[in-house]
Length: 260
Ligand code: 5BU
Image 1 (cartoon, rainbow, N blue to C red):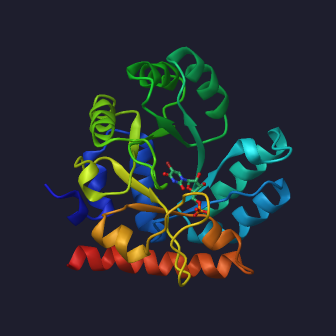
Image 2 (cartoon, protein in one colour):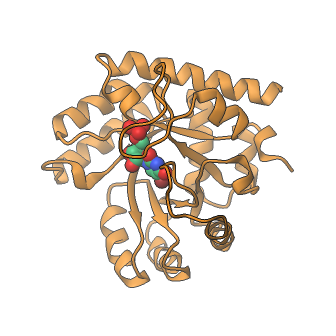
Image 3 (cartoon, rainbow, N blue to C red):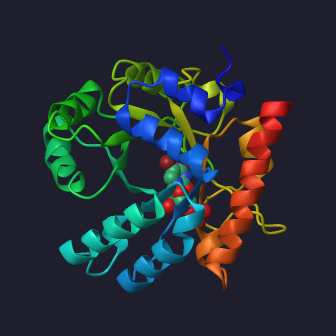
């Protein structure tokens, strides 16, 4: 079937990943498919963003290694905010090492994150390692990176295909795929997460290779289920107000896709 024609609620029937079904239902409850990329270095600013933007997002995505003094207390506080506003916390760590090392890294990150990104570059060992650890914590969902948004990145069509094929072998683990195109995978149980979106006029890239599309392009033409927005929101004078604007645009694009 065509996954882009199923409502979020319907997609729950196809997933075997607990985190993915939670995500599908919170998206349809809150009517938001917006993921905030909270790429800030100051931990107070991070928590303030989570509080202010929280009502408008399904995922609060961070890079823990860029934050100054992100300690136990702050992680607990972020978890509390996530519970209050009903969003999930993603660590965009892009794990990529051999299975054993990834297992050790995962065991730390799974103490506070609900979702995590991984590269499939090192092969099956990385997913086996996470699966072994998952027995203790069933609620962490993995997003596998099959494509990147950056210009001239080194991922080939063959690598993308093999990544999706590998992900298919771990349905309980895999919440979704980070990719750019509708054709990248077909399993309706996987969530398509797509970064590289900005609504400012004439902003199509940054000067370090990032490439931007519109909400309509990624949701309607490329069938994204969750859209990642960072600087378009966090650099605005009023992040909460602009997040609401992104939320509405992205949700309308989804509704239009379903009617098309
Ligand atoms: P931006 O400020 O909207 O450009 O931030 C995009 C975020 O998505 C940032 O945190 C990146 O690390 C992340 N990202 C990406 O931009 N492109 C990719 O292909 C992947 C992740 Br995978």
